[in-house]
Length: 88
Image 1 (spheres, rainbow, N blue to C red):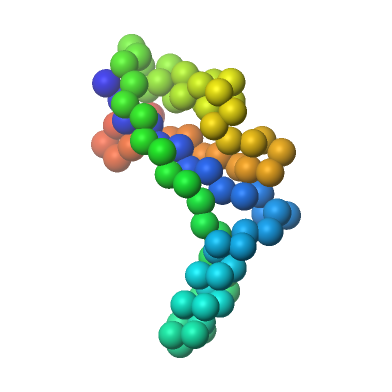
Image 2 (cartoon, one colour):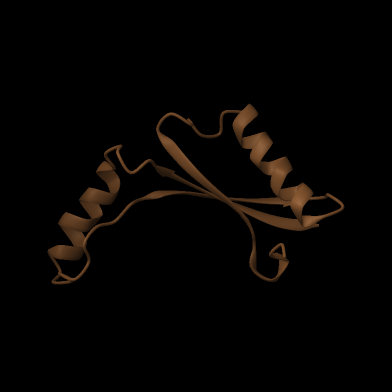
């Protein structure tokens, strides 16, 4: 069993109102002025039964795309193995 993490964020050229609000209304307002920006996103964790880590990664990538878990026009995704399960 492999634990595969998926992080979904807005593409760089797409506004991120949630990240902007956290940055402006919380972080900067509380004096953390060295933070240049914040991007918010979604985190998903999949537990996958596949023979290898690489197969688990590809399976989750395909699943996310085919089921439209993200919109490839406006979102970027990072798919990676979790912790000690990382693929070599």
